[in-house]
Length: 478
Image (cartoon, rainbow, N blue to C red; front, side, top):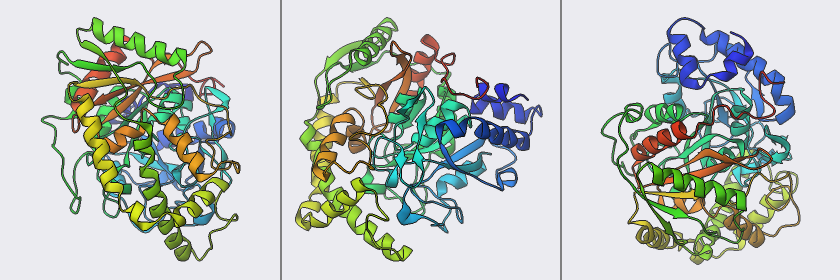
């Protein structure tokens, strides 16, 4: 198999070649290494390609048999492998726990071959750090790949692997999916277990899944990673059939709520709004009932959660520093996160313990506002990919903690709210700017209803295919 051929397949396609005997898992791993060597120097998406990748574990069967895979350098763990979280504070850290997530990955035949970049502590929408440098967007090297799963997104968009691990606590899968032209689903709260030691992470706001290029890969990955494990705090409704089977099911007629207004302080760019409007028209032509909706929450509601998060983060960092035998200082934390740490230490405990009530009220208000709809159609991001640096980078020394909260609330206006409500939401690469930058459009489902999202995403992919739109820096093109 040629490298250009490797990059042209999605994960499902590569696995089918392995199953038919046309290619071996070892060949795919070697192709992934060749792809990495060709494009990673330009984009800096992968911070470690495992030296022993060719002997990596993976079942000799499974829906993704032999497919190369990347682990985001924060969140789910592989026992004994480095996990540095993009931070000098964690340099050299090797967890000794295998996450259920990666047990499932191996059982499905995925071969994890390395680590992808993340901003320090996964804390910003731009993947750049003092430890690992800047991750560049394969569509435009002067722009950000997004964050915090920016390394995963850049690697997939550039063709290093067809699918990669990501996690999302406020948009961290969907933001880089939008800016890098990928499919990025944030599943329902509880759909993917964080066990054995990270269940319902970060007050229930964070979930893990993947970034990929096709809806069929998204559906297959849901079948791989979905399901509860012992010790999970709750078990949500399980699907009636597999998500791959949903790809052949009719969608039915849906009530669609469309967001054409800004939900925060960052104004909606005209090209992004145009993408929403053309997608709304397409859904209407498919027979769905489309109605405009007003913003379902006030930005101040979302920003309140940050006070308790800061307190919890400060406590967690102090524990981590002790465990690593290091101190928290400008030598171990970037300027933005150091200010966040100092801010969190000063937050009164009384304010922090109010978090669950803050989240409850927001879930209730948003739930009432959108209850009449089967799905929502929104922008993923209000703007196209940003140039590197600026106010959203944790390496920026100019921003105070309060200003960073405001900035995060403003730019994550369509994503973070659904981490709070727990609803599944997917960014699809359905639009592009005049100069060829990807624009993600977000589809939001009812809680626990990924099945409808799979069917709608399939319909939109068939009606407005994106496979022919490729990043400028991509395996086989350079």
